[in-house]
Image 1 (cartoon, rainbow, N blue to C red):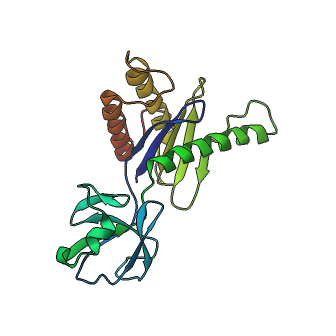
Image 2: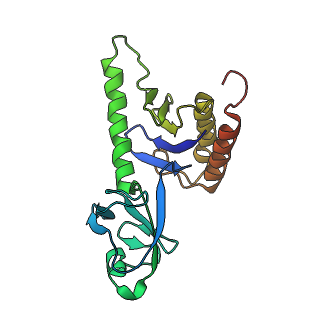
Image 3: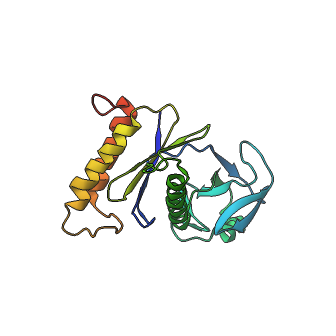
Length: 219
């Protein structure tokens, strides 16, 4: 079982916290000699495979790491430009890890705003007044669970479809938010959450949920 991500969205639809707990993506790492037998191109600030498939590497996969150093967009973590580095024969042999492109910060902000709008649409489409809005979306690879507080804050968890105890986890995250964000004198309501104690307790709650699947009776 696995819990993939946690999002906290304010009542205006802004993303104020996001944590990736587990990345269930297929990755392939290979050592290449020069010249590289894959065609790489820059697209949406990512270096993607445009042509050539081998050993689990597919068209559309992104360069995630070079020689063990993570790649962020078109640069490595130590500041090297990916296409320029891979175009230099002196840098070979080179180990490259490929996988599904990771969401950028801007994409996460956009998706949070889109879900906020879908949540509102779901409430308006209800044939009965007082609908709670979207509480769960299900796909073949994950479930999206949402809990909205009375003040309009949304807690969203993406998890394996078989993961149990998510309703209790959502309320546990709300409890952590109340204890370590709202009671923090330096935190401003509706603003991004940057609190070490919130991070630590959230990660602990996710670990407990993945192992036990519940948070007490009735979960």
